[in-house]
Amino acid sequence: MEMIDSQTLLQSHQTVRRELLAMRDAHGVWRGWLSSSPLATATSVSALSLFADRSPDDALSNACRQLSHRGVDWLLGRQNADGGWGDTDRSLSNISTTLLAMAALRLAGASARAGDALGRAEQYVQRQGGTDAVVRRYGNDRTFAVPILMNCALAGMVDWSSVGSLPFEWACLPHRFWRSIRLPVVSYALPALVAVGQACYHHRKPWNPITRLLRGLCRQASLSVIEPMQPADGGFLEAIPLTAFVAMALSSIGLAEHPIARRGVKFLLNAFRDDGGCPIDIDLAVWNTTLAVGSLAKAAGDVGALGCLDWLLGCQHTREHPFTHAPPGGWAWTDLSGGVPDADDTSGALLALRSLRGSAAPSQHHRIDSAAAAGIRWLLDLQNQDGGWPTFCRGWGKLPFDRSSPDLTAHAIRALWAWAPNASAAASGHDQPPSSEVPRSAPTGGSRQGFPVAEISAAVSRGFEYLSRMQQPDGSWTPLWFGNQFEPNEENRVYGTSRVLLAFAAAGRTARPEAVRGVDWLMSRQSADGGWGGDREAAPRPSSVEETAVALESLLATCADRKHPLPIQAALQWLIGAVESGQYREASPIGLYFAKLWYYEKTYPVVFTLAALGEAIRRWLPANGHSEHHQ
Image 1: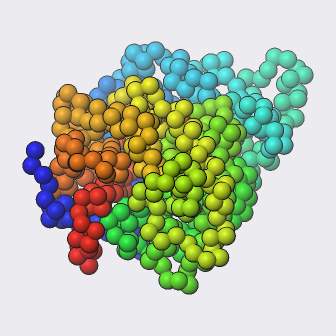
Image 2: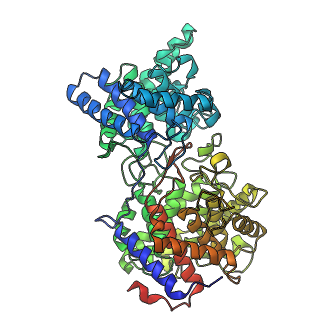
Image 3: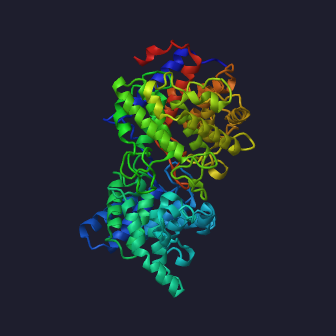
């Protein structure tokens, strides 16, 4: 196979770098663009329609009806050929989104003009096994199963006896008890537990009069618990479906004028785009920006993105969060008021700050180091007893999106390592220095006093023990926040394994048996075209830019001491070809927004491609042989 010459690699990197820098907003931030979502649009249409029918506010009701009609038009234009709807316009149909779209069309009064679409959708639903398929899809997690079926019941599609219930009264217990009572929803879904739970109670009262009385007495108290959780803009977690479920539930029980419902409806109105669709969330600005900074820093000390430094520092949460009661020090995925601090975004912010520090003025170092010290403390305190890191809350281990996960754990390890390179020998058990993940210059002098190196070392060791336990027998790791709709169980082990391998590379553990097995598995999943994410036998489904880029980046980092094996060369040729053809801009629906809700983000293929090409430059070209392309 012909080797990629240095000039071709540099030119491709320069092309993608220019593209990524051009994606910034006026403040130097990567707000990105989340795909419009039939699921989010359908739930919004249902919520606005129910509110409009029950609110005495004529002006607000008319605005709701107008946008509901536009949402209906948008939904009718996105129905798949099989009669169902997927979570994006590039997604396979699924039972949840199809049922929600059907309910929205009915609640919006569009049954007549949508008759053909509803007929084809009904056939799809029956082929999937009816509404029982919703319960099978989510298992024991009622976070979305009950709201989806509630939406169907409100549209007259199912009886309330099929919906189930949610114990909204449990929200009245002190917060410290929530994890111990094992709520049937994930930690971030308390607003849905209360609002949807009350709707289920209202529409199907318990037969026991004592139970009915006691639960009824908790209605106002439980609403008082979630009201402070609602951010200023009205959107719980900035998430359209969660906010829509809350608004429609409250409207359906005569509480359309409750402040929670009104604020939620106004948020939904603002979430609609000009074409009539809604995204799953408003934006992933912090996540996108930290990814961009890391990718820009791969092949150069000056990341060319210092404009976002003050903004990123300002995004750090400095108070206990009212939603999860998270302490100060973490970062959320967005700077908007509905963001909640989480492990992945805090790790990303710490890595980005470490990269930006090298180009920042010395007068900024103390501020950066103080923010990093608080972020490190936040991450250390979040680590679970099993050694892994969860998303939002420590100790919520019952449901998948509350448990520790390999991708979050690997990210946290890399972030901690970057700020405490002295933890190297203690945590790795040998003197091999960490790879280039560790910054060229660590904080010096008094600033290092804020970094508990011994504690970081112990946390990293426990994190690697968790990763070892979570490795699948075939050598792969399964992530939490990314998927592949074509794979069994919709898992994206290419992404998960790639991200875990970066942690092994950062810590100088590439010779460990777990890392070797991970590399072997990743190479075994390479498609015939040289990429990842497609059919390995070169069948109709092509590889994706995102999965090829993350796999290539991790293999380059992990196999730095090897003689550039043919799989890496083939992957690099595939990715450079994608740059030359413009394919590197084509986003795939690999993102998971909570429980099997899919999205794609236009920033991902560009930022992941730049990271992989930057890693190739770092590993393949002489140390000083590529500086000219950053001028």
